[in-house]
Length: 143
Length: 127
Image (tube, rainbow over the protein chains, first blue to last red):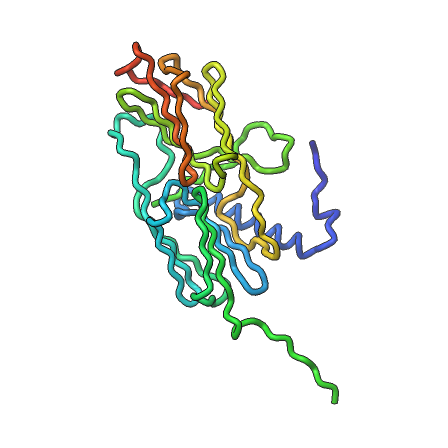
C-alpha cells in the first residue's frame, strides 16, 4: 500500500528531525555491518536520563559485567559456543567469544542510580544525570 | 567479536506496521539430533511460536511493547520488531519428537533424526 511520507502531515517538525536522525543512525549501522561491534546498541534519552538497550541473547546475566565511569558505560561478557564439532555445523550465523563494548553517553551520569534489567536476551540500562548537572531554570528579576 | 545482526527480511510486507527480522540461526547435528538455535532477543517465552507443517518449520517471535515514556531514540544500531524465519526440514527427521526450549532469548529446537537417517547428514535449507 503506497503511503504518503509521514512528514507531510506531521505537526511537530522536530519529530521529523529526530526520525531522520534515527534513520540515518540506522543506515550507518547497516552500512558498517560486518565490522559492527557486538552487542548492537540503541540509545534513548529523556531530559534527565539516558537508556541504553542491547541485544545479548544467549548470555547468562551473571556472565555480564556492566560498569560506568563519568560518561562512559562499559558492557563486557562472554558468550560460549555450543559444544559441537566443526563438521557438524550446517548453518553458523551467531558469534561467540568474549566481547566488550564502550558507549559514550550524552552526559555525565550518577553511577549510584543505575538500573540494569536483563530479560530474555535483551539488556536495558537506565542511567540518570546527577542533580547538580541538570539544567536549571533561571528566574528573571524585573528591575 | 563481530555482530551479524539480522537485516529486515525481504519477505512480502505484512499488514502490521512493525518491522519483521530474520533471527540469526545456528544449525548443527549430533549423533541423534538436528539442533537449531535461533536468537529472539527481547521476546518473552509466551511470544515464541514454533509451527511444523509437513516439512516446513516456522519460527516466530513477537516483541512485547516497550514502555519508554519520556524517552526518544537518539542512536540506533538495531531495529526493534518481531522475528520470523522459515526452514525446510528433510525427510530424515522424526517430526513428532521435536522439542523446544527458550532461555535468555535463544530458542533451541532439537529434532530427532529418524532411525534410518541416523549417522547421515541431514541438509536443512532456508525456504
